[in-house]
Length: 237
Image 1: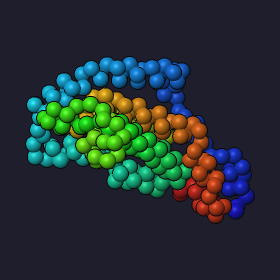
Image 2 (image 1 turned 30 degrees about the vertical axis):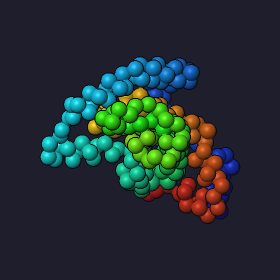
Image 3 (image 1 turned 60 degrees about the vertical axis):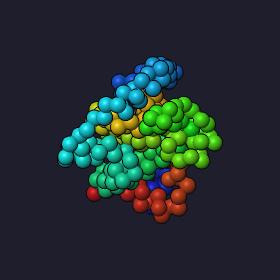
């Protein structure tokens, strides 16, 4: 292990959060905002779901393909490619790529656990008169049709956005804008209710920021063999 790497790993690697517009807000106020948004969304879920089913928005030709591509922001292929790009292009890319991966995986794992526990029926089942939360027996055993809450697409999108905004705050409007587009499309394509996407977004941002604040990526790196740590902490040229 090199002398420089030895010095670096004495303290667990950590990059503090950037100054965002919400930096001065106490954490409880952010949770309160999320709860208020959920409380507002729930009463309108069924109405919005029925409207989306009865008024499908059709994007024609290449526009539809472009919209589908944008909706995949934060999904597996997109996230992996972006994390690889960060690892290759940023001087601190390898540590940041690991941090992005840890944050995104944490958010997605929590999202799928909640999906199974809640067992909420998808909006497309409204045609059959099915609406509501049916619990783990449906969420874990009946597949995607009963895994509406929270939205995994939205969680993935906001997880990637939150991680990128942590390391590249100048681009946060773009990152979160793409995440909002994903959430919007999940509703208008009658795959999710409004409260599903609100919950998915809140869960993802909370999970990613918490993982980074609690230094999970740094703890993971510190647990790796010294030769791997040397490689990770070697700056890209």
